[in-house]
Amino acid sequence: MTSFRGRFRSTSTSLSVIESERMVIRVLDPSQAEMMVKFRNENREFLTQWEPARSSEYYTPAFWQVQLRMALRQFREQSHLSFSMLNKAETEVLGVCNYSNIVRGTFQSCHLGYATAEKHQSKGYMAEAINASIGYVFNELKLHRVMANYMPRNARSGDLLARLGFTVEGKASQYLQINGVWEDHVLTSRINPKDQ
Ligand SMILES: CC(C)(COP(=O)(O)OP(=O)(O)OC[C@H]1O[C@@H](n2cnc3c(N)ncnc32)[C@H](O)[C@@H]1OP(=O)(O)O)[C@@H](O)C(=O)NCCC(=O)NCCS
Image 1 (cartoon, protein in one colour):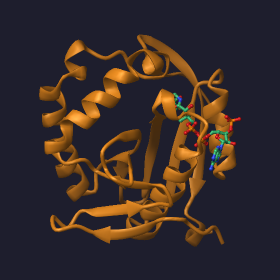
Image 2 (image 1 turned 120 degrees about the horizontal axis):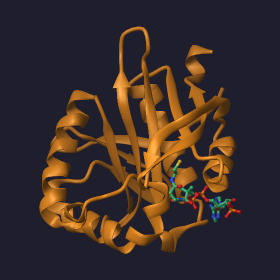
Image 3 (image 1 turned 30 degrees about the vertical axis):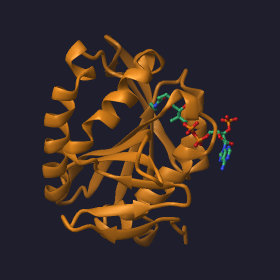
Image 4 (image 1 turned 90 degrees about the vertical axis):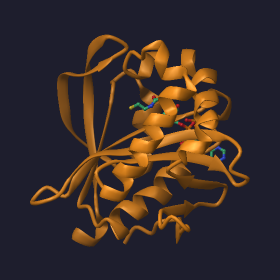
């Protein structure tokens, strides 16, 4: 059975915080919007080729104050987990990993998306964050399947998913609009080991 390297604790606002070896993984409070604005601005150019086209508003504190309020609500509703990967002092966003489109009923599944800051690439942060947060998704939310999809040219993302035990299930043409272009994607997923 796969083991997950994350510890979960509840905060005064009864939000779960996930602790991994080097990080605190949590939904940011709207009062911490500046940290996310810094992450987004510092990585604007680096992430352009891997993400949807963003409006200039996306890089402002006003946008993130609203966005983070919505993220808290979505976390409480368990419809979307927008996790920020923070250093232990909680002063810097090292990356983000999001579990979106959480569907219950007979599906019990969600999609995973992620990005590590350019200056923190290849330090193992994303593997650590997904290992810890997917434990929360499988053990606390008890979802059955996490799906993660990548463009064929994004070898780093494909390698990361393979290392984390995601298996390729197919290919979808013109699947997501990335930087203004409908891009083909490789479809992968990982199933809750408790359901196997
Ligand atoms: C894909 C992406 C998220 C990987 O992030 P990352 O934090 O560098 O990923 P990892 O944490 O697994 O680290 C990868 C590398 O660190 C190495 N590594 C793993 N654990 C490590 C550790 N504890 N210490 C140091 N290095 C480590 C891995 O062997 C791997 O080596 P590589 O550079 O030869 O690939 C990142 O490249 C990224 O943000 N890309 C742009 C956005 C994107 O593509 N998002 C996904 C869209 S599908």
